[in-house]
Length: 450
Image (cartoon, rainbow, N blue to C red):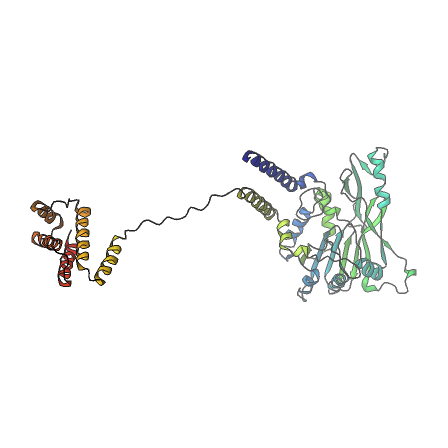
């Protein structure tokens, strides 16, 4: 029965270890995952960009927003200017956050957003109403031809290089523009790659009763070309500050930044950011439904939780998993029957003196002095046998001399004690004075003997 039990335990542990190993190594199985995470070193993470920005703005100050964007921006010093940086899939701003970011830009700060798409309140209240811009996408143009690529029917050399789809980013300004553009590649076989891009499309002023005020000027800084061309990089002057928006985060992935031209493109993009304290947004890419009118909120409460912090840190994540595994193993093996606790056995105590004292008090109160004297004689003889290893069945001169030598008590005093014992054995009762005299002699022996 125990062998079957051990076999089941081993099988359960193997299943747990295999599952845990797969979960921990999952990143290596999905190395082409388009995650845009600052901690990821795979091709489509943004680890390189994050570290470069952190190093570039270290002297002026580089801070990270890990809680509420609204609260973080409100706590900033009013007499300083800042850069706000968001690089990820999509910023989920609710209307309150959008209002705070707009006031932040109006005060003279720079808001930099690099994302794969924008939705909700920011598009409606900022891009559309303030700058008369709408967003269009090349989803239909880019996604459906992938079926032709997979079946090897599309031979368009301008869009296919081996196993990759490519396109170019470029700038409009002559001092920034590159003759050949900045080429990027997307791996076809990666299921999670986003195969479409948003572009800015100006809405004709004829649709509006009020034109864009001069204080909110627009300048298009760049374009993206894969199938046709589209404006994807805009600088929007907003009060004393500005919005710098790039409708793609692909240029800041490790795969793009590994090349010299990729670094050059990123450097030209970030040249639009002043040299001042920079804030990196860690939470607005998280989606959380809200009862607000737009339904989006970037200030995710999960991002504030201790578990989220543990799982984001590799060392803490490993410690968390090993702790859980250790608890499971302990629970499995602790379930076996345990040995009962062995009770503590107290050592035996010598209660003979207490017994004698108790019996003596009993006899004394009953005035049976002869019984007490006899008990004292027996205890005295027992004391001699145990302490001096002498026989007490023959009491003679040789006995007295030997006891005198061993105890260092005068022979006369020893003989006096035994003379008292002889008298006691001859009578049936004694008075209290004689009992006291015998007790006095015995106490002298016990206290003086060696």
